Image 1: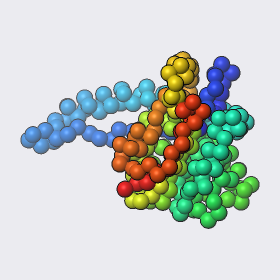
Image 2 (image 1 turned 45 degrees about the horizontal axis):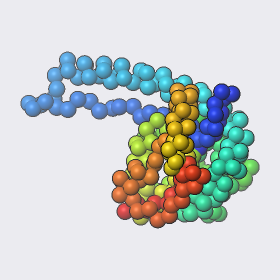
Image 3 (image 1 turned 180 degrees about the horizontal axis):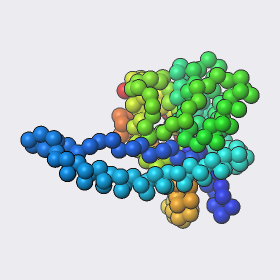
Length: 259
């Protein structure tokens, strides 16, 4: 979530908005004697279109939600920054070096926490939040390349960045595994991945409470409370160099090195 924005009926939603689903562009595999028949290709294409239609509708619904709540986001996140994520932005951003990509940059709440001298690029799915980030960058005098984009299909070549950052956003990206894979792809060998988010709590009663909250938060805004991005990072072969988990295990932050 990246990282939250709360509607009147929501409870302690503390994450960030989603990125768009990537479109499927892969056609059918060739048959044993060459390309698949045109009829088969047509059937597969129709199925893909049918699958994409509800995804596209859900995607647009979530985009409208985050655009609507963009102006109240900073105030709501301020509460969580003070009481739940205290120090998390400094912990993450102070480690960033070189050419830095922040995925789901939101309204730019991390901008003031980066060291002087980093070359910063930010990607955000919500146009309304991106406008606020641009305004914040101007107020701070911070040069940032801000772009609208998809965390699950980053529009950058492989091995582009020295550091990739994502804070309080993977909780609400539809496919967090795919988003982590994209972050790994655009990170240079030896580069640093920096993540912070709310995750599945350690005690089972807290996890049960999170499951109840998800009954509202997932349909309303795609917000998940029981994810563990660190598992995707480890599965990608990264070395965890620093790691902290606190507040009943609900908040997790990590620094991981790409092989």
